[in-house]
Length: 280
Image (cartoon, rainbow, N blue to C red; front, side, top):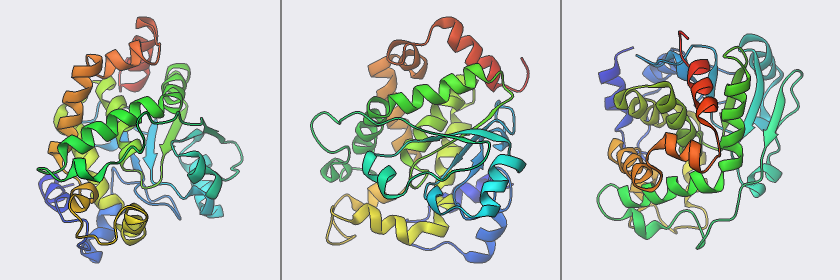
């Protein structure tokens, strides 16, 4: 995989389609996993320079309610996934419930209410590339979805590095991206590897891009030209970096969040790290 080429593609404006021929090749190559009838699925262990063991931690876009029989067989058989964690709102979960898959436990923890209203405030995305809006929105993810995030970490802790886990939201972008960044950080991945995984979502959601843009705009703007909307739709490394700085300021880093907010002990964290990495 040519990382430089992929990073260039990830800078493509969200309103601009990617080239279909090259896209098909990329989405069928690691770290992307071509799970039938899904999109934006990746193995965090197949990222370049990833310290996570391959075949252990998967992330994907949502809409699993429409997954095909082939997709179900791929999840349980080919990938060996035993637990799927759904990081969506109650409304999203009710509208598109997770499917029943033999041998796979579907876990959804109701998210908490957002203090002060909606997680997304478009006016916060106007300045720069939307760094302030992203930092606040992703901090809200850590607060609102802490039950689901705790569940993912408990599975990694208790699975002894042998039981594969998958987590998803709708686009597999923001909520899923936060959890992926958290796990990669605990595993000791470099800032470059973590940012690369975050940015790959611009390529991964391309098959559902128009649908996702429609969902993003619905009820928020009357035109995609509205100030801040394009920043909200795009993926930028500077936005992820702003979030990481905000986590450091509020929690003392991701590990501080896991310890202080989620309540994991030092022994728990050591076990999670050990189970994630390629060599114990």
